[in-house]
Image 1 (cartoon, rainbow, N blue to C red):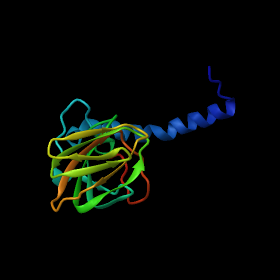
Image 2: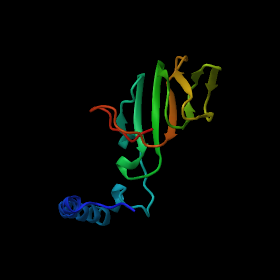
Image 3: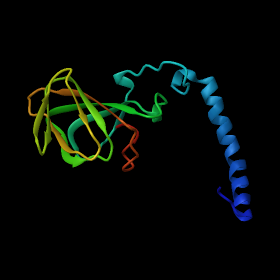
Length: 165
């Protein structure tokens, strides 16, 4: 059992009092604006034009957009983003601490690993376990669109919006 000393209890009460108006505002927004994705009992449509751009470190010649994630109120436990890679675009080889899935919608993409390259075409996917080193490169002369699904990630810098996988 956790025992909080009297001084800590006083600070906890003060913190709770300061937090009450903020919690009230959040609950009010959830009730008044369910169409904005704050409601957990409704479907939320996100169009590509409304997706939130983010800037994953180590990626180049590409555009990343967060589609479903905690920032937009559409999920709590996962995030889904769309990456659009220009010819020659990709992501540096590295180790991710979390698992993810890549699903190619359009074009052909090469996932590089120590064991060899994995080529993904339309409707192909690959599961990337946590701790596995891999990179991504678009070796083709066409744009590649790919969905990335994984846990929400924290912000890395001021430009980074976080949450997308």
